[in-house]
Image (cartoon, rainbow, N blue to C red; front, side, top):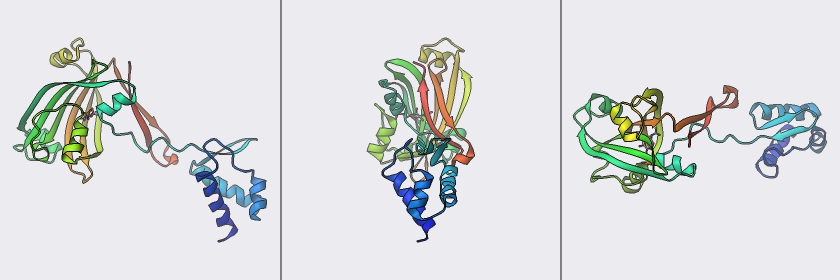
Length: 245
Ligand code: 16G
């Protein structure tokens, strides 16, 4: 190993072990002496770590270990997890549970033919007993044989009973207003503002397993998405959805 490589390996070890986030690395001079390299070499090594956003410099104070990113992408959660994380008790009122033909749009999203059967579940999702969201979920009937009703978390059931684990989703969010029926279900005035989130969820084998439309009351729910510059390694990281309680 060259001196340069030794220095790099040493810095890696320091950051993974001994020195935690927001703690200071040894001064440049000390590192240069310990490894028998010039201060310029030490600076180059630190520059590289700074570009990778693994350390940051504070003028006059030194070089500090950066906090790791919270998560790489907007996190995929179920309604149940989302509410629990915020200390709210998730609940559901089942309105519809039926098996119907997919039709062209749902069929397209789930890679089925329009005549193939899907299970349609309509639920009012509550947080601490208060209606928060109206959800329509469609699942290929062939993937969930014997499912005749739904209690509790859909994603937990899919996992426990059918070994289906949702690992990624394609999602769009747009503004809308509540029609008469959705307003009645959500205990809100007709035509009040809402957020419509449409999701196609995929399992570990990348099969589309759910197409869902979730309509959130605009006055009770907001999405929080942390964004960062591309230089940080990923265009968008860490998201947490939050409701307005
Ligand atoms: C989320 C999903 C919805 C899914 C549900 C499962 C969005 C926009 N929608 O609400 O597609 O069906 O979670 O929740 O994130 P559950 O496991 O609590 O039933």
